[in-house]
Length: 609
Image (tube, rainbow, N blue to C red; front, side, top):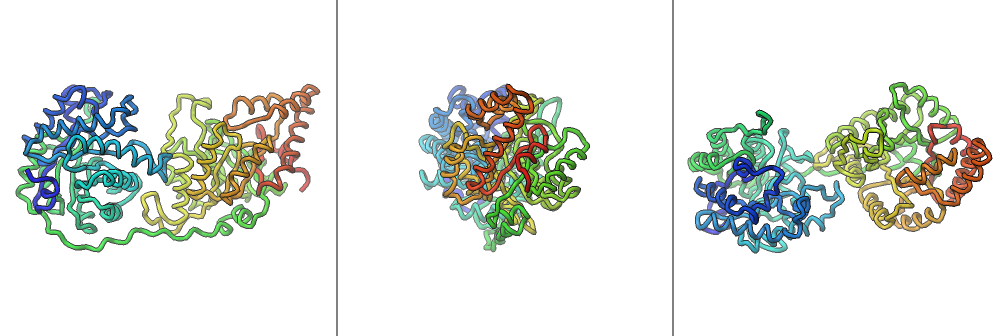
């Protein structure tokens, strides 16, 4: 058997193997088992599956290591065994392949989002991929198959990690949905040239959709890249049959499409989920009768280029004040729990009459179900004519839902956002509700910043750019202050244009925060919360995450509340007034919460204007 590089250069069509997970499941291996660890615990069953694919005619055998990276293995307590599992898997595949097939080390995604839409840095991702590649190399692979990636940047991290360790051939495969694009919306015409520039040897598509969808992706790739192409589709889309997910595409159907893929430009064909040795045997017969498309030179279409964001001062009245350095005053009003917005309108009208610059609309604070923040903000702007700063949380929506919401909000005229990760559902009255947290506030800030430059998450042009003023939250009293400062720095790097703090009751803590944020040159809006009673103060101090009420403030509220309810309220207002005057020369604005929806309390704090 020639080595893999010779095989890729010979100009002929070659067939890869099919699914490993499908075969293991058919042999009675439960889904809750770590399939990657089976190379250590049940090597015979893995070796036998490899051999079945070799007998079917596969010339490329993938190691059983799709999920054998330290992050996924950690879910099974196996992170420390990453190198050992990958080495054993490579040796098993090498033994089964003999001289009849080449062995490629399979590396899949980490199962988490990396920057810019996740907390994991590119360097951390590269380190994880490097551990897997180290084990595969020790086991004697002939090359690498990086497969089922939906994020071009994560694939780039994997390619970089492998290239730092080896110059063996790399087959790099993305996965697309029924719309022909990746999870981030990137089309083959965009990701193909981007991957080619990484220095890989083969570019391809696998998984997710069946033969028809992969064929269309190959046709698009063939127009924009000249590297060899690979195609490894699922055996159709899975269907629910008797409570089991079944792949319905027959071996003959898969083989027919494999021939079409070769004619469209694929040099390597095989199968993914749902495929078996029978599918591969049929593909071998059909593929051998097809002639691969001759290599040709094409000019790849230019990737969409972002446009400059509209200047901050031109996006909204709030943005204009922030850009000019003026002091801004905003007030937080929670949306109604029901469907009647009239009480909310009355509150906002009183604030508008008092001269506040904008009203803040939180998004399900403390995981409570209320009227949606986006719609509430639109209603306020339409009915009252005061700008809204809409808090937008990552808790309840996946990336697709967020993108849809934001495009709709931009079209409707909303301009001011405060991006937050969101309180977990267990804090609220529906503790069994599920959270999404598809991305966090850092990832969402990146997303909105891209929209402001006219690009979606996949790098595709959206037409006219959005005009959002991008705000983020920060906590000057965070228990892990260094992590909070690191996250704020990442948010600024992602495109944040102002920051709103949690309620401030301690000037020393605020000054420490401002000292650390001064290097970012980002406007800071200090959060203020007028206390209405001792009970309210104790609740904030003990039950609201991110809020710290100093002992001295609690003592003032205790002494005043002992006199009576009105005295306690008056003391709370006085504390808020003192804090307002103290922070005014330090920050560029304040966000004052209306405690328990009591707008008159806020008006007392603001005083005559």
